Amino acid sequence: MNDLTIIYYTSNYLDDHNPYFLANTKKQLLKAIGNLPIISVSQRPLDLGTNICVGDIGRSHLNIYRQILLGTKLAKTKYVAMAEDDILYSYEHFHTYVPVEDKFAYNMNKWSLFTWAVPPVFAYTHRRVVNSLISKTAMLVDALEERFDKFKNTPEENI
Image (tube, rainbow, N blue to C red; front, side, top):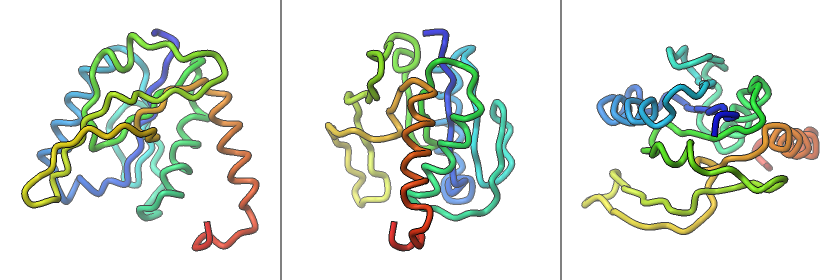
């Protein structure tokens, strides 16, 4: 799949809390994406593809979607694929799957390692998560803008 841009979003939490893990997930991401373009949206400046630094806006689900929307709006390809800073992605995830037209696609073959648990937990979770999303760029922008517009007058703590 050549008409794909990777949207990498991060709060930069791992920069301070687990830099070794972060360095390895980035290394694997770059290996997995090959020559595909990447747009990184971060809360601190980042040397990864085209970077948009949004400043210290804090960690929240709402800010994840804000960052995704910013990056997706910059993409010049037909499709976008999400990438988080704490996920290991395979080459196949980005290069072999072509989404069905007008549908959001999620890679459901995902194993998780919860390193904050003692002892760490290794689990197979069969659920849709934004970090495995691949979709048409315009469709994702439209969906996110519609949702943000719907709640524009709602206090953030109520969203």
